[in-house]
Image (cartoon, rainbow, N blue to C red; front, side, top):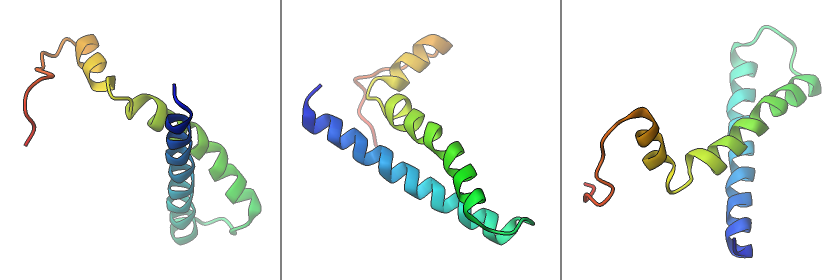
Length: 83
């Protein structure tokens, strides 16, 4: 894998971590009953990091949906034009 590609993946992982962390913290702040502090931020970060990595490295892989449909037994045409 090229160095440029690795940096691009890392960029998306970092963006995914920060955007998901902001989403979770805003939800906890507005709808949570606990006092907001660094412990809540750390706990949210622990849950955000694995999901951001899974999202970028697995789901956003170019052949993920082809493999997923093959495993599920769905027939698709990978050469069909998209709208």
